[in-house]
Length: 211
Image (cartoon, rainbow, N blue to C red; front, side, top):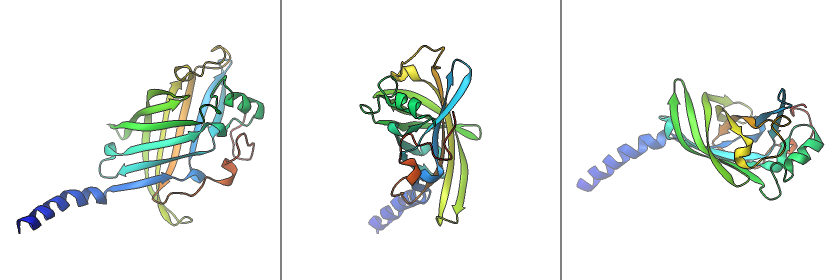
């Protein structure tokens, strides 16, 4: 009898938590990892990474207990200018052959009004720094095509590229500050592969940011 009482007590704590927890995976066809840097101190040059993957261990009852983890294929960088993209992959910038991946792992999520401060470790060129994303949870919506619920998130942060060893060029030519913006649709089913048009580094196909 006592064993049953103990078991019921344990389950009463575990089951509510399980009911509000969900492991979600990025839908690469409807998500984006984009950035914006300055040229000559004035011009805003946008770009994106076409190949990435990640997951969110979401606690719907208390989002501050959630965790996020994502990886970006650096060679998939695309600013819609082939020569510039090749230069960005070179040792002058990302050195994609030596450091093929950039990663982010969350360490804390804190409430900030209606939104959140998502803090974590960002690693580029094997250099890891703490960054904080201003983040929003945009809610849950049913995707009638994929026949699954989607959870939608948005976050942005500004980093100094030189903190990560991306030191090419004086600041007057290539700005030090880079804005990162992540828009995510996440779902319970892990996708098998990214969208076909995301798999070609340097592609200039439609939908990519312009010069």
